[in-house]
Image 1 (tube, rainbow, N blue to C red):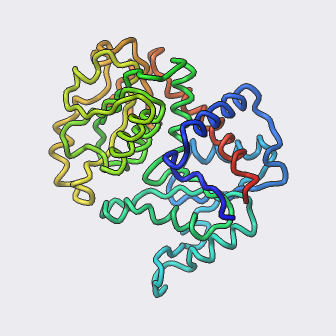
Image 2 (tube, rainbow, N blue to C red):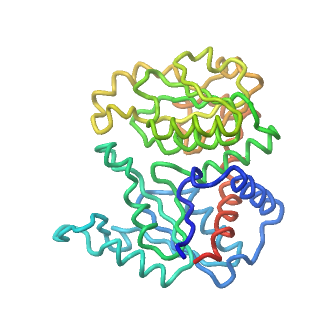
Length: 335
């Protein structure tokens, strides 16, 4: 039987998400466990990491398991993902061998692989992690590709800790300025989890060009319909912030300009006023503020916002450890 993977929360029901959050809360109260005793996980990082690597390594250790960290192209061979490719370039081995060999060694495989930022039509296929899931015979976990499901769970757990029920709470997912265009992964994921939790979600961005991929907008609308929430898009800062219970900030590149960043730059530079500051937060319903981190202070959010009691970004970051333990524990017996 094929293993169950954790690639996106969209593959999980609301009841399954709630169960993972409940287990994560239990791990937060009592960190130790033996769910991974004698078990191991391979963590493959195609991109840099701090919170993700630290929390997964520690999480495996706290559950009695062992984590092996690999960086393909640095301390491990570069990997080829194209089917039928003639491997006469820089790649040394094919994913068909890598995933199957690792599956003989470890009980879980986790992958972090950002888009290449050249062609969204290509990047949206999420080729790297899908290839691991296709060839692996053990469960595969998404540590961030074009979505970031572990961050979603950590975010949802932090919100529940501070707000209790999330049903119909006003949630603002706001674009913020950044000097360079970034992946849409966290924005996609915030939209997915907030709508799945039945919140009333507003996607706030400078222009229609910054609306997220229609696949995720469609998932968001479906989640809202199924869970009694709502989803709308706004370009009006005051309207969006007014009465908000939660403000979640993230910068991302406009998809129509994907790979043509210089053409996007004038729009981006003209939108620095989307920074999260005290004046905007004053419009909220004593709203919470969070961000996935890392965050450039006084670019995405001001010092006053980051240092205020309303900021729960550190709580969310801590929760990465607990939710990832819940995910690993739920998958470990399948491989």
